[in-house]
Length: 234
Ligand SMILES: [Zn+2]
Image 1 (cartoon, rainbow, N blue to C red):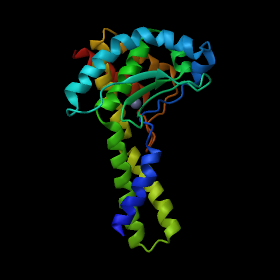
Image 2 (cartoon, rainbow, N blue to C red; image 1 turned 60 degrees about the vertical axis):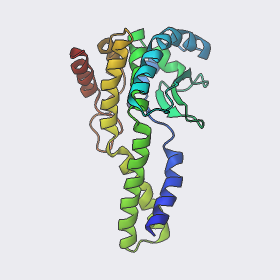
Image 3 (spheres, rainbow, N blue to C red; image 1 turned 90 degrees about the horizontal axis):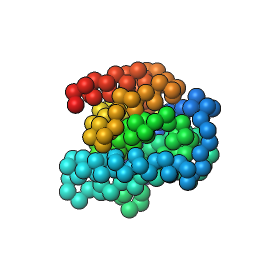
Image 4 (cartoon, protein in one colour; image 1 turned 120 degrees about the horizontal axis):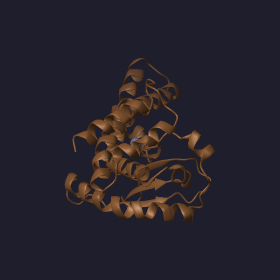
């Protein structure tokens, strides 16, 4: 039974966890920022990418086991009307992707903000957060599935209990991962020649998720403190 639970869970969860990091959508930015076409967004991101990418790839190669894919593909979401967002994921060939929407780029006040967001997303890959979230989700689902089975749950009830378990599991360390990515992102942005403290001012303009139980992101004020503290030590 346990093996079946793990198998079911793995199949379901790998599909759910493709997106690594989703920043909270900054509605305040989208209202005030001018709309950018995808090509304009690419043109604005290019100079930042040329400085951050080599540094991120160097950190990646130094941190991950030999043979890991550190060839970041940094790109703009082709959907021009997508909400302000940036995220990290891995394509089918295992290549790490960092995706910005045009709206996020349009809403950035300076290159330090773009460099910080880019470095934060690269840090998620370097720290292996996507794989760790998948394992957290599987663990959560298995624990809940075993408990539900022992309690005599019907197959339907077991399925929904495991979905809940997967969600709880995947979020259990989500805020810690964000803080880790902010710390390493601060270092990468700094080594790329940008000011991460100025870059983290971005957090002042996005909705604050607060400290919600099982929320995916930590409070913005805490994140700014982490960046300041890390930058002070560089
Ligand atoms: Zn993140």
